[in-house]
Image: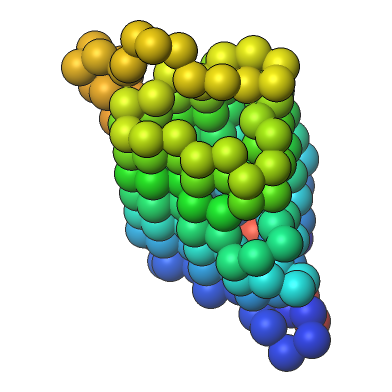
Length: 176
């Protein structure tokens, strides 16, 4: 369901796909070929949340923040991610069940491991491999193989979303 809130209506690119079982409300912008999967809540009630192009927010994620949030192009949030992050840069993967608390900034070409818990206001440089509870960056950086997998994941979800869209699934009507 896509909802306006206090005069703010989500802006969804015509090529993007939002499941009818997702809840997108308020000041939210969703870019080209991005997808929002069932059970996800994107709540732009007090801040703006921007999803770039080829961003996939997989099933049962929650996105909200204390300040405007930006997810750049080719970002994948795995199933069940809770993200209050401030800025996720291009070509990043957040693993299933990870939690990113308020103010987190993740450099491009980075991975947050499944189940990791990133504490408030942590900032990671490009090519970070973030693991643990509380999460920290390993000395090992992400590799070219990781970067290709991140990109493939985003592109595969964009293709899957287009198939759902072609079958008439998804909800793009704004409910006020």
